[in-house]
Image (cartoon, rainbow, N blue to C red; front, side, top):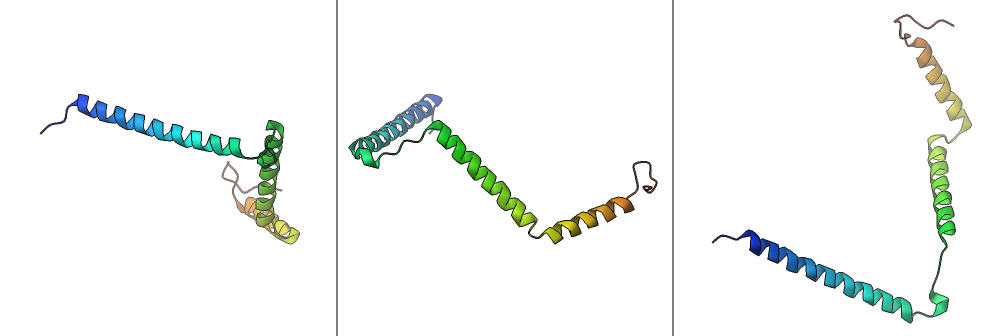
Length: 100
C-alpha cells in the first residue's frame, strides 16, 4: 500500500486547520477572561516602563556577575598582580622577553 503526495498534503492541511482552530479557541477564551475581569484587575504598562524595567534588570544582572567575579578588593589586586607577572614572563611577538 502506498501513500500519495496528495494524501499527505491533505493530511497536513487538515492538521494545520485543526491547530489553527485550537489556537483561535484558546485566544478567544483568554480574551473573554480578560474582558470579564474588573477594571481594577487589569494592568497596563507603557512601552517606556517596560524598556526601563529591562534596563534595570540587565544592570542588576551585570552588577551581580561582577560582584560574583570580584568579591573582595584584595582579590582584584591579587588577580591583577598575577596577570602582570604572567605578561612580564611571556615573550613578546618578536620572541624576546619584554624589557622594562
